[in-house]
Amino acid sequence: MDSIQLELLNAVAGLHEVPQGAYSLRINGEAVGKNSTENIDIVKKEDKPGIDIIIKPGTKNESLHMPVILSQSGVQDMVYNDFYIGEDADVTIVAGCGIHNGGDKKSEHDGIHTFHVAKNARVKYVEKHYGSGDGAGERILNPQTIIYIEEDGYLEMDTVQIKGVDSTVRTTTAELKDRATLIIKEKIMTHGKQYAKTDFVVDMNGDECKANLISRSVAKDESHQIFVSKINGNNRCMGHSECDAILMDQGSVSAIPEITANHLEASLIHEAAIGKIAGEQITKLMTLGLTEAEAEAQIVNGFLR
Image (tube, rainbow, N blue to C red):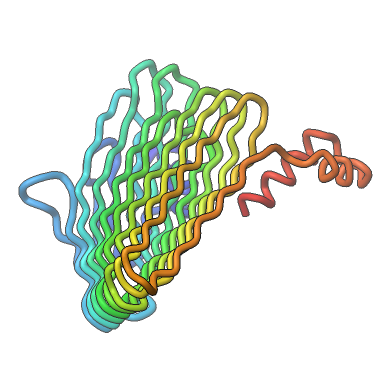
């Protein structure tokens, strides 16, 4: 890998070289390396670009790295990845996509990721999006995630996009069975004329299942964000959706939460708060010796932490 590719690898996966253990590495639309382990099998799809990730039942304390890197202008990449997490497994998956565009053509990575979380399995999924380069070509990311969680299964997703992506539409759908748990935490910062849309739909079909969707975002300059969340309580369940956003400059944010209770014992809550940084917060930090810009940066960093 060259220096730009290594920079992207570090930005999205915290790696300085090809990882040890189970991994799949994709660069400029091509699968360039993968490694399976005794408990995590990575199989290339035959009919379309992408892989099947098969995690054996009972697998504990293992991780999988899946970085995607685009360092050439004009790359159009599409992948289909299917995750099969066996019963009683407990694993961490570190994914993400970094795009460097120094040219005039748009670079785009789209992915359809389907998670099958078996009974009593636990998954921590971490995904980062990052863009760099001073070319006029756009950096575009459109991830689609489809989630099926069986009885007593657990999936926690942490997604971060705080720099350099011109346009992104993140679509997530989920179906939860009895006592299944889904937690999604996203952090987004846009600037310039960037656009980001999040669209969550969760069907809470199982008895005593739980869902918690949390979005924190900052819209700077003339950027625009849309947050859409729809929770359908179809059984005795607990669902919560929250969107907190900070506006700066001429940024704009739309929050569109929807909750539908189709069962007498469905307990659903939605919250949304959008506004600018309070002046007293900035003043307090400036009395400690910070400039106004430094105070704003510290508040934003703390908000997105």
